[in-house]
Length: 442
Image 1 (cartoon, rainbow, N blue to C red):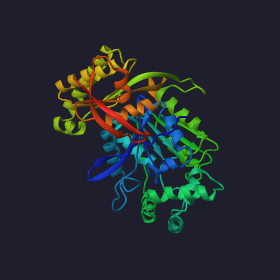
Image 2 (cartoon, rainbow, N blue to C red):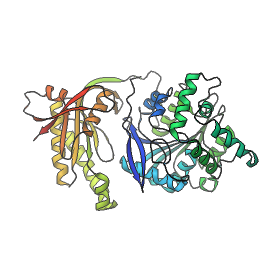
Image 3 (cartoon, rainbow, N blue to C red):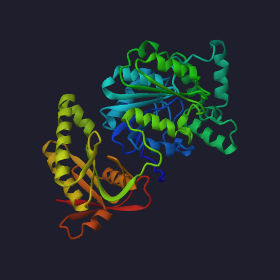
């Protein structure tokens, strides 16, 4: 597995609240992860297996993850957010990343909200996957015992004891508990976590389940020490047409274990219809990678309205396909408000970016673009690898109507008649070293 590069944390506005999110992976579909009651986008990658499992999910999907309001890197808020407010936050993140339709992957406490969102906005959800979920939160602890249970949880908050049950550690070392405790503390305060537990007891999505019409996969483990497997069975039986898969020895937090390859395979097969074979070959080739993005797309969408905006996006997508084909490139995917394409020659990639930028301006859509040449991994119609991440970071440094390239590109097109202007040396988040960037000149 390649070294993991921490994705850039960005923020989406949901009303007056800023919601932290990250995007990683290069698959052709979008998959939004709705976390449970403990989350922190960056600290979670300090825990075992998370980064590797994120990369495995990224084999077939663009992974969108976020911290709910009041938790992790998102804004702290007074009180406990309602399911309706959480739905607004999901919609805000999807809009921010330009995702028109996504696979919704709910985990634990994130499952009820995912059910409600899917039933309310089926046009935004292609598939629903529920892991370690429940129908009603007050299933396991009688009301008379709940206060004492919540007080114990608060007293131990930050020690790692809560997460110890989530990840299924019978005997945790001091080092493991320290890492788990940090994750708890960075997620939210003890009082905030108690408020979440109190509110969760009121959740009951029973009336909503029959309204879920998107393809649904329910996953649960017999060894789940947080949500009993009986709750997963109820959830799977209550959603019309849902597929239910039960595992034996996995913990509540399945993605915290190295043994969840079967879970990821089940999700991939459910979403794509294809299950990767063990040891599936990955071709590695040298290519020039192009990323483009419509600048200020959200502002433009508000300005022209939904109908006109979708017409413009459709025109952009048709135009991009034509321009990439004309320059002998491969359009890997549309990213919502941009594209990812590859070329077997860097000169063609630069000329394609310039031509696409000029054509998009005629539509009133200012583009920014970034290119880098390096070794990529080709897995079917998908691509990945460090070169893809570098190209994305280069694009992130470009301005409206600008095509930025790495020094590798300028060196390889010497003598090809292309002109460049120096833009300086930059740190690219998650990529070692300083990078000299250049703007292609018409």
